[in-house]
Length: 431
Image (tube, rainbow, N blue to C red; front, side, top):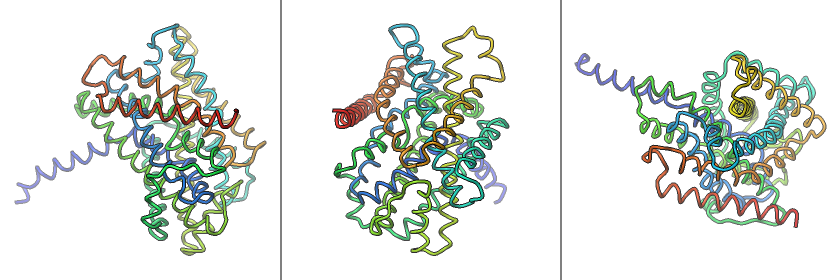
């Protein structure tokens, strides 16, 4: 009987290994997403406005999904990244690449500053021993050393482990202090309470993450193609796998966002506490300790650090990877850029780290830095959304791999929503 069952067990084991092996780019993207927008902006929104902004978690995930799906879709269909697609856009030569290069430089300088500020603030209040600036320095150098010793395999394993740790810690806290069904129903009722415009814009820009990460998603997917091909997957199979991969990470991101905003509304708002400054994480952890006991302090802090460090790790890889790919594409004859050591990758990593160190030393307020980064991401989002849409609808040769009618309509609705949101914020802010 055991012999008869063995083939079935073997098949089950092989299928399980293939499932785990197939996970990758979407989970890394989720680890990148579950960071500043969740750990900082969601609890701040709950603490300041209760459940009034819960709808943002649903709407931003809903309307941005096609933009991220297009990253892996283009990679599977063409075996190149969206950066290569930007280089094929009609019009003046390489204008799409030049636009995205500008976006990469602006966001590389600002986004890393935001995620490092929060991560260093957690180290200050939990580990201590060093100043805020010195923790920034240690964090950056340690992350760069990890990248130096090996990128993609470590990135994948670390992202999965840290994502699971954050989810576990968040679920424990959420189950202990659940919101009422009526409060959760606010997720479907859009509202913009007075004084929330800046925070709304920031959440729309950063949750689940900036649309520029769709390009990273395509870069990670291109690198992951070899793993899928080793299992004999066809292009259609790889597309389905990438969609499942993204759906798992994306769904987890939405769930964690809902829980963290709810925790801010239930635990912080009644006490008039709004996370701010270097002690942003400490404000949240103290409430957990009062309600659940001292055991919750290390659980939450480890989970928060895990989420933020995975974001720092991914961001410090994503922007330099995009930057170096852009330069190599724009300057194909440059011998320096095409060296195996990839000097442009490391040079840009050092640049954004140095800028982050200086910015956070001069402006030691993680909440403010993250909020400003979110606004920048929102203003850029409609442009990148449109470029991604054109690439997958016009530049993929295999019609079967292009997005179908429903997904195109979904994407057009998303572009309209993000354009209106960016325009509305710009109008209210400047006019």
